[in-house]
Amino acid sequence: MKTYIKFILGLSLILTSCTKDVLEVASSTNISSETFWKTEADARLALNGIYSTLSGLEQNYIYYDVMSDNAYNNYPWEGYKAVADGTHDARGPGVISWIWSACFQGIGRANVLLDNIDNVEGLDEDFKNSSKGEALFLRAYFYFKLTDFYGGVPLILESPKIEHSELPRDTKDAVVSQVITDLDQAFTLLPSNQSEKGKATKGAAKALKARVLLYNNRWSEAATVAQEVMGMGYSLFPNYRDLFREANENNEEVIFDVQYKSPEQGNFIELYLGSYTVGGWSSVVPLQNMIDEYKMTDGMSIADSPLYDPANPYDNRDPRLKQTVSVPGATINGIVGHVGEFGGYMFKKYTEYDETGVVSPTPYPTRTGQNVIIMRLASVLLTYAEAQNEAVGPDTSVYNAINAIRARPSVNMPPLPSGLTKEQMREAIRHERRVELLLEGTRYSDIRRWGIAEQVMNGLVDPGGTRTFNPNRDYLFPIPAAEFDIEGTALQQNPNY
Image (cartoon, rainbow, N blue to C red; front, top):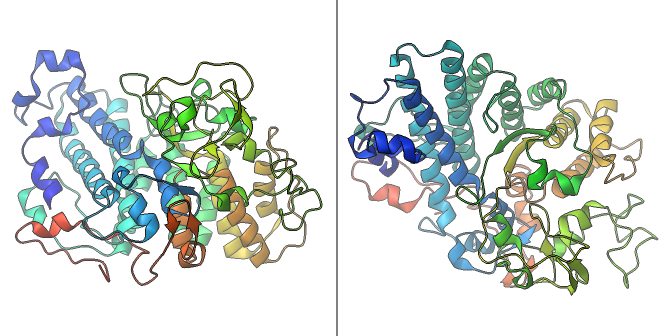
């Protein structure tokens, strides 16, 4: 596979996150297995290289909602629109190959660390164990991502070799089994609290394991593991809007996030989300279909609630609507009556846009240091609620998990009505996941694992046209076409590509 051939060229390729001072001491072109893996600094550099792959992979995860019924992207060259339209194939758009190559790059880097870190003499034992745990956690994350998007993939647990390019795909079940094994081992090695922000912890390993189990319909196991995370000391941040602001990153709700630092190691999320008026690109904008999902403050839908007024459609809505989205006519950065492009809406979540004061428009372009949240307590509560409901039905613990999220002080939505059937609770949980986790990279996975993608995508009209989803093909990404250009490959393509 192309990814592995790149890795065999030398250890310098795993060190793209090298700091300037390290590179001045030893040029990356001279790094080799003979000169590297001598000091703790070498091990730290290798570990940071794995995290660097993660930050490159997930800085665009807000675009995943574009591929679902949540959001729209107007620009084909950004690499996601064709998936939403159902016109993608093995040669594109870019996301088809980006996720594949980034994940295998991260896996390769993790394997190199796991194979070599014991060779570093005099290494602090706690640091060594934590580094191994982090590498196992990240390898599990990358492999989980691959199974979610592509199904079964080659399972490689050693440093990259040329012959890996000829390996066939392992089954999805085999890869998931290894992911669980890696996470269990990582849990034994990781600390409960890290001295460095953004590094994997025991809580992160458990939370990821719960998500993996959930995505693979292992309901009882997922509920058990999620419940363990719920007892590990995390708590809901009181303000939903502020939860996603840079000033509050690494707060008590966050279990694992990807770290960015403005401007040198920042991301462009605010630029992608902002409207033209505030200096953004309007790359990811909410669909009307998503806006309509938000219920009224009485807990009823806009179709059923007496509170809904078509003349004032954004009043008396779930407060998360206006904490997530700038609706037409809002004041943003001192601009009164702001209206976003491609439907009139603009995302505020993950931005610093001000809703009341007079603030200068955002510079163009801009990098921000806002971290990307991968797992937080609310997502674990939702994992528990779904898994427990599927396993045993809507018992008290399921209500408690969902109602805790709805009772967040800045949200304060009414509790779910009592007496729901299992099917009714399932729909309530799916609604809550869609609203609470909007822009957090979960909806595209959710509609596919629930088997409802063709129902919610086919015929959906967005500002660019009408969407299609082929259930005989589109539940998985194709294996990137470039992988089949390699002589000797034993890979087989996913069906109907």
